[in-house]
Image 1 (cartoon, rainbow, N blue to C red):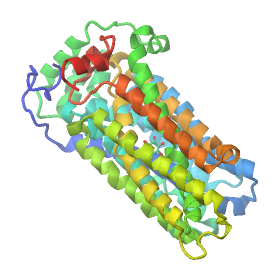
Image 2 (cartoon, helix red, strand yellow):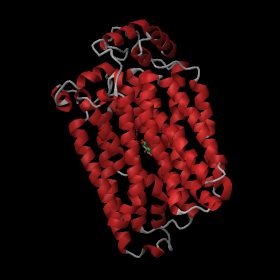
Image 3 (spheres, protein in one colour):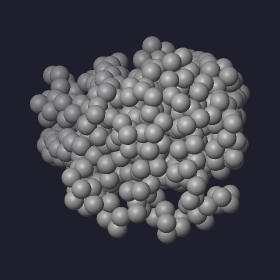
Image 4 (cartoon, rainbow, N blue to C red):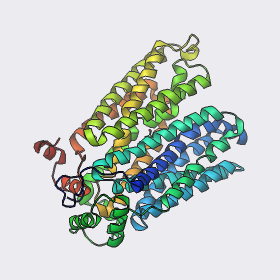
Length: 486
Ligand code: BGC
């Protein structure tokens, strides 16, 4: 038992972990990284109009300006895997913060679209690097019994970032304020750099590169309530059987890692193909159909019905992920997502049939109001389940030696799927229609439910080392069921 969280742990000095100053700072790192991720994701919708007016851009350029952050993030995530394993989690996060600042400044001072697009790519690269390194760092620094909570704070911060971006969009909508909107993200990036600077790297990374003394020092700094030397010995003992040679990309795709890799990639992909970002991004348009006539009315509905509900429901996960476990939250959320997506599909069926060109003349239609409620249910269901839990599970299922790279692969799949959905959502709507598009998302949610039910084991309350033992079973979920731990 390599952690004090388990009652039988040899190194157990205390059952309840204390939140000391350094552990709180780990929380601040994860919070700032998530804020940047969310803000950069949410702010572009409000900035596009001004950019279009300033540079007189065509639609193709607007799409590039919008989506290249995601492409940059995909590459950033992959690079971060190697970096986080080689130079450490801490330096990788510092690098991400520097990229954020450079990217934000390039964007906000851009004299033309070329520099703007370069700025978007650099910011995207930073988002991608941080989206791998920050949750990884948090998962490795957190006491086992708080690990889910620490990683879901990352998701909470993403949702706060999106919400703040929606608010800024609402407040600053006029021609040239887009420069301020995009430039603002340099502020939390500088803060991230300053908070990260005095922090130690994670003890597990120090151990991985053979710096045992630093591992003990780092652990006793961040968690003064545990017997650091004993705990580090246990972790070392548990990983002794692991091969000592440097980890490689080939190893990530080896047969030995197939089960956790499939779980990580599957969760990453399902999180996106069930439609979250289509809704986050196109909420305004959907609310327009629901009868919210003015852009201000639509923006307000998006800010509160989507942005604020997203934050509030994520709080549920932060509180309950370590109590209820990962599987119950995932499965319950998918039920809510399936029902609400189907409802939106049905109401669109009626809205499509009716002449929506005059929709809203007399206020929101009934079908429109049902859509609004269904979207709130969808966001809430995603926010307490797939949103945070996917990131939590991805960061706890891989063995120490390849964790950085393996997390990077799953994260890159997440960005790749996000890019596909945002790129093809409008095309799908044009070719198969609104209703069928939402039925398709609902269908993927059903598939996700069945697959998680069969393939994703429970990881709550288990140390990293115990989680590795799960994969030794042929059918991990069935074994947990047989053992009565599900
Ligand atoms: C997803 C993002 C999404 C956000 C919404 C995150 O977990 O990875 O793609 O925009 O949740 O809150």
